[in-house]
Length: 386
Image (cartoon, rainbow, N blue to C red; front, side, top):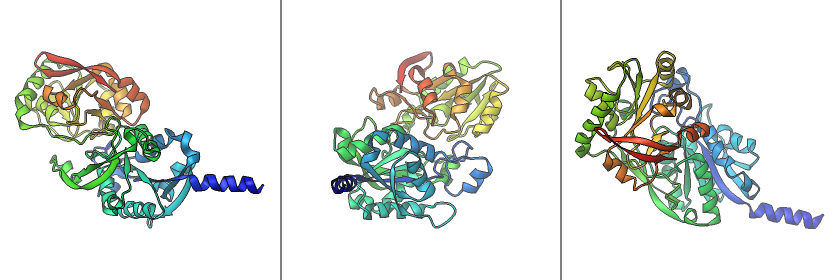
C-alpha cells in the first residue's frame, strides 16, 4: 500500500504544468459583423453573438487527450479555462478567479502572471491579437515562458498562433517534450490594430512586443502582410475577369480585402474594405453584411463567394471574415467559391497551400483540395487548399 502511494505521488510530482487560458468573449463580434468584441460586447450580445473561443479551446485540448494523465493545467475559474478542461478530463489547478460577471483584460493578465508563479512551463491560450497583447503585458516573455495561441479572435495578425486549434495542441506537446521543431522556440511579434479603426475600414498595425513561440513554422501561422500599392493594375485585371463572369439573378458575396475591393470598384459600387458586401445584378444590395444577413440572402437567391487569401498568411476563411460562417459556407457550396489573388501575393506564400479555419472541421474538410485562383483577365492557376 505504501509503495503504491509513493508511486502515485511520484507520478503526480512528475506531471508537467501547462497554463491554459481562454478569453471567452474573443471572436464573438465576428459573425455579427462587428469585426471584434473590444468595447462592444453588449452590442454583440444584443445582436445574438455566441461564444466561439471555448469550442476552439476544447478542440485544442481534445487533440492531446492521450497526454492528459501527464499534465496539470493551470487555469482560471469557470469560462477562463476550468470548465472546458474539466469536461475533457484534465487535472486542473485553478490559479485565478475573475472578479466580475464578465472576464476582462485584467483577468487575462492576472491569470498569466499566476501561471508563471505556479511554475507553468508554457501557456496555451485561446483568443486573438488583443489577448496576445495581454500576455505581453503580463511579463511572461521576460519570465521565459513560451506560448501557443489557439486562433479564436477576429483579428489574428500576430504570428503567435497555430494555424488551427488542433495544431496548437500538437505544438504544446512538442514544446513540453522538446521534440523536433516544436521543441525549439523563437521570438514572434505581437501585432494589433485598433478595433475602432478596423470598424471604420482603417488598418493601422502596431507592434506591441514579443512572445516566445515554437519554431515549427509549418504549424504556426505567418504574420499578415498588406498588399503593396504596385498591385493596383493586377487587381483591376482580376476584377474585370470576375465582373465578366457574373450572372443575372445570382448574389455574389464579396469578402474583405483590397483585392476584392477592386471588383466593387469595377462595378462602380460602394465597398466595405474589412467587411462582406452582397452584389446582385451589378448592384450592392447589402453592405457590411452579418452572418444573419448572408443567410437571409441565401434563402432567396443562388449565391457565389468571392474571397482572397490574407497576405503573408494564406488564409481564405477564418481570419477576419467570420461572417462567412460554416452555415453560410454550406449554403454557398465549394463549387461556388471564387478565389482571386495576384501572382505576387501567391509568390509570398512560397508554394505553401491556402488555409481554411472556419470553426467547423467538417466544413474545413469540404473546402480542402485544389481550387482555381484567378490571377488576371482570363488567367488562373490551381492551388492546394488545406
